[in-house]
Image 1: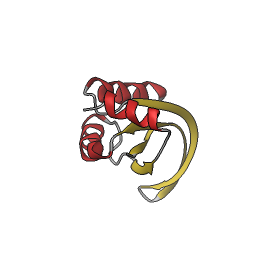
Image 2: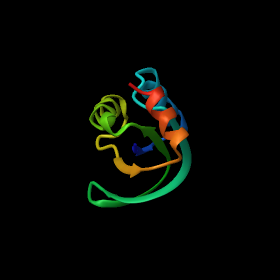
Image 3: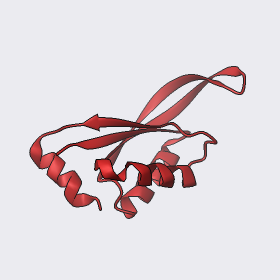
Image 4: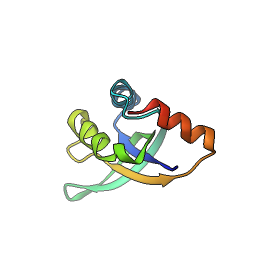
Length: 102
């Protein structure tokens, strides 16, 4: 069994928590972690440097498209960063992710 980690950047901790809680309530993810980051990127023809929060969201692989759809529905960014990483963990943790998501 394997799972995915979905990487999402957010403008604030409040947004990261709101998005994560929305996905938890829908049973689309088993958990999420939030970390402050410094981001540098091109946006509308100029370089931006911003403080953001990254969320690492753990879920079953089959939930990928549903997670993307839900994040895009409620995220404040015009073009949210939503990246999928394939992952493996100890068997009991993977079972927990499977049990906590639908």
